[in-house]
Image (cartoon, rainbow, N blue to C red; front, side):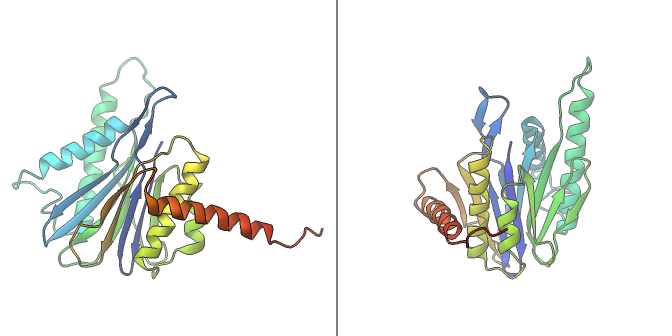
Amino acid sequence: MTYCVAMCLSSGLIFASDSRTNAGVDHIATFRKLTVFEEEGDRILVLQSAGNLATTQSIVNLLQRRCKDAERINLLNAPNMYEAARLVGETAREVIHRDSDAQYGGSTTDFSCSLLLGGQIMGEDTRLFYIYPQGNFIEATADTPYFQIGESKYGKPIIDRVLNYHTPLEQAMQCALISIDSTLRSNLSVGLPLDVMIYPRNSFSSSQQYRITEDHPYFTMIRKNWGEGITSMFSQLPPLEL
């Protein structure tokens, strides 16, 4: 299982992904689920993935390979983020169709995946898309400034309570980390380390990428403070009167 969250805010973009894959209790491994496509000074695109690992790895591999072919539309020369999202959707549909058609004997394997694509291309604002297994997609708006894929239910309440389109990037990242921590506590199939990125609007820089491990001092501190704060607030609630 996976949990990824991305936020498109007035001041930029936030990305956070766990790195655990789970194909049974004895097949747990760590794989990066956040991939950056970058052309210095022109574009930053961030792709997050959840679902069948073979499918998502094939999609990322194809997208990376095709970036080397300047004769075809790829993520490094697409004219805008909409076309980039369409390209990712087509690639996802291509891989899922190819792999599912290759199966015989009534296989029940689920080849589907979900993808988040966010970033900025010179000449337009930051944008964020949720791409479905069928290849179609929706775009984040000021009213709905974030998307989640994977095991989303445990981390959703904190985001809904705290986040809005004008939330500062630093606070939004805190919200994303607490959202993931809530998921870590409730679902063992989501796990550390985390891959996170802060993208300030119009910076065209991927320098604010970080890997957060179990002993990361800041993550340890906010996990502790958040847990203690909830416990303290709960103890201060008035007595039950029915």
